[in-house]
View 1 (cartoon, rainbow, N blue to C red):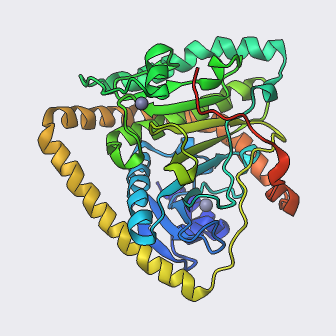
View 2 (cartoon, rainbow, N blue to C red; view 1 turned 90 degrees about the horizontal axis):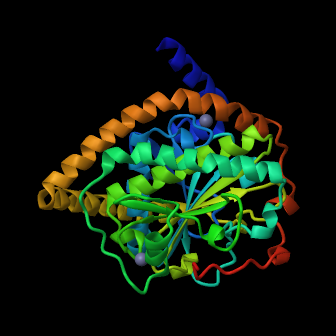
Length: 390
Ligand SMILES: [Zn+2]
Ligand SMILES: [Zn+2]
């Protein structure tokens, strides 16, 4: 235990985000809990741009323990309400960048929550072009061989959480249809589909993780479902890293949530995307940081922290109501989550040892990005729209 504490303290001395999360450096805090400190970005992409910073030093999101993922789900869900009630934004993005190739800029995991309005100049990573994935036949074979393994891991993780819920689907919804027809993985609460595969991609490169029930936006999605979706996204990320690392190919992953039309949500069904990232794919998150005065920051902080508090209270009331309504199901879910936590705890060391060195090496060898790299030209590429899943 002593050793762990020492390591944590050593990091606290060195890592900027450890210092911010643990308040060794002052910042504009809008919300905090046991796992995360949520602060305003001092150079925001939009007013109210929040950085969700783990209090412990994690490099990438697959390292987050399940309790932290549940806490993140709560923060994400509350933020949708807080951005609307506090600041009047009708949409927001959640962005996680795992690895240098995914645009990660700090060795400490930082999760962005960005309020969006239509026609702002913010650009999120987009679904990859199938053409980008022109790789050797060997790799194709290797990756395809790993797919059953990937499904088996998901299956194992979720078998504890099976509930007898019959999902309410919508016949006119493209994503509901894709979940029905050929899901990559299907569970009673959360499904995974691979839209690029339907378009002829030969490698897993892009996943949509969606509630099996048709919820339009995150505000409607129950917390346990959102937690499971985030957990699946982390798991897929870790597996993709592993599969490609075996081949000596560096990749990164973005985990993106587009909630609401201003945030670029194009499907009428809430989902989280896992986007595989390769070297020089020109797919980075781009924005122009706004200059904000100290006064403006602190007034935003005041408004948003109140809005977060209200949103959290509403969420707690909602969870209690749900528990009373469906005691059996909630009990099952919480039992299942405990089991999942135990499973994850057991898997953690192996996962870390495979994944960490590479990511850390990448980040250490990173030099300060040039302006061009950081804000790649907006005109760099027009991407295929993905409104329809065939
Ligand atoms: Zn740190
Ligand atoms: Zn649907």
